[in-house]
Image (cartoon, rainbow, N blue to C red; front, side, top):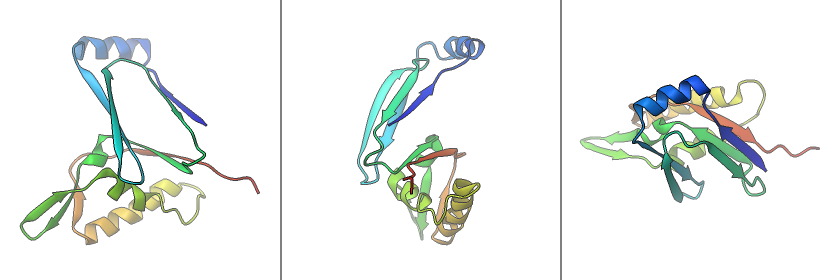
Length: 133
């Protein structure tokens, strides 16, 4: 099991609460099969994820930029689902060094050739389940 927690430092938490006191945040869970669930909570509510890794060999954490990918074909523009972006980004050939950065750079070139682009910044982090040999 992987446990992920995001807590803000006291000073940053105070700044955020002053700016976003009446706002909420939405966390969307995208799954490899294309399904998704979402959770909404107070903007400054601590996030704590527990992920069972039995059926999840890769856990990818992404910023909201994952939902900004568009495919343009002629005059038609189609927004892609997160799993259409995530799945090819986690098909790692190896996991040495900066494997996620390397894979993402290569996949972004493929997306570009396929007429797929995005309009927001994108941050990704990966957790891998590695079987001991």
